[in-house]
Image (tube, rainbow, N blue to C red; front, top):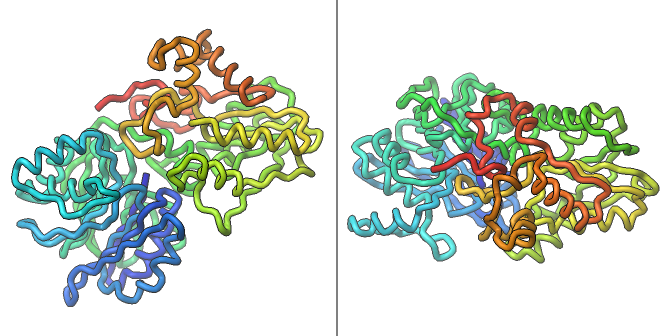
Length: 468
């Protein structure tokens, strides 16, 4: 997916920029980049590969060179960023959190207009450069950003570093967030509000869908009003978000706890304790334990000193190995227990299969699983949720194909909790992984826990309800 941070201050911004960007590291694994601007030295940029290392270790040595009071940073799961452009709008640097479904079509349109692409990421067009080229077709930055909104299918939020502060523009449907922070003598914009507390920023504003603002050290100017319609990704609260982050005023851990508590209050299964699969299942499990009235036990611990996120490797076999290395079961807490585990989602099912086998090998008497979101039936065309290239990588679609002979058959029925098709699919998943029981959260419970109207929240990957 990716996350960014930008700040403009009355004093040097390098320290805030470094740490603020680092607080987005859980959102991306491939590239990290920083850019600053100073009147004396202009734009200064650095980009590093993060696939086998961490942001902090790559950028610490560069920190002293970032002069100036304004800067932007990015942790990206896609292309190398920031991009620096010289155009009729002036020189600017840009970072994006984006997924462009029609990138090949737009690439051909721009090439036919005699434009060219200088940046390539893994032998493909750098989508941040493509977005920059769409922007410079406008007469102003606002006009250019409107051009982006008009042409792309998918989503795009961005920060633009200029010689007159930072322009922040949120995706036109608000699928990804931008949060504005303020402290004495400085403003900041970020994907994750967890960047703010330790840098002494307070949340000032959540940008609305399509809203554009300009930040200077002493002011925030609205350049475009927000759209009415919003489709913020529900998976931000389920999985992506850091526990202390807030989107639209709703805290990630609070939502996870509430959704778990609601499940626990309704669940009639008899279990001895609840446990969360680290990290994103923990908040839900704590809520489940309280709602169910059973103790919370840490029967699995996460080993983090040497292992980055489990889906960093492009190879599925390596992803599975890394996932296994990270999660260490505690036999003393598992033996002879009827234990219930909470997790964020089931995508391919690979990690679930391996985890459940280990739990039984460690002496668990029963293994129950509760999932924070509904079954993933549709792939996401709007944000970079997984590296899946085909819907058949989803375990639900493989089961539908087995049952119907067509992976696209009766999708509405399979996506609707309580239907015979839904119950059969969930039963097969439980049986396939030797689970004592398996339940998924419903869309209604998830949306209720988030606390926003259903029409404001994107649940496309569960029910196929959102469109370009």
